[in-house]
Image 1 (cartoon, rainbow, N blue to C red):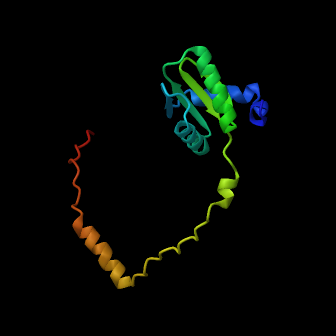
Image 2: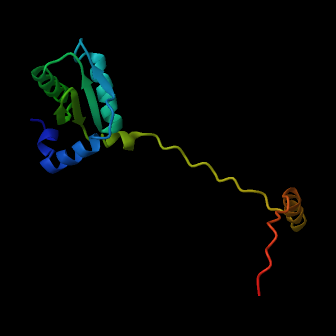
Image 3: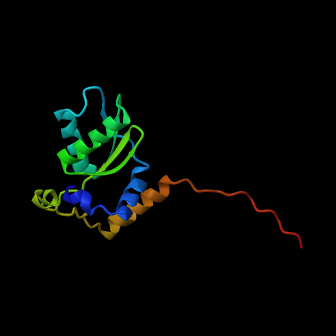
Length: 144
């Protein structure tokens, strides 16, 4: 058991299963099994999303369990759930990636030029002339 699996409590595992319920599988493993490109794709998805579903084709239950164990050991991830042909895997996002990302300086805010009173009045006059005057239905006379 690695450190991540040991730190995954039953309560946390239940929360992750609930979160994974709405997810769609992002990676599929087929006849060739767990190849290097598939491992890289799963690693990339775990780095991005933390919690992913993996669909496995053409395997029996024992093979899928072994595949899940191998996958988690190779990527230092925690198995959350194995149900049918779906494997749910979780790995915490690395914190170093956020701190080493270059920070772009903030762009200066664009300030609109100030309008003179005459220009502001002309602007509102044009807007008022462009709008048609809305006429409602004539009111009925009230009974007295």
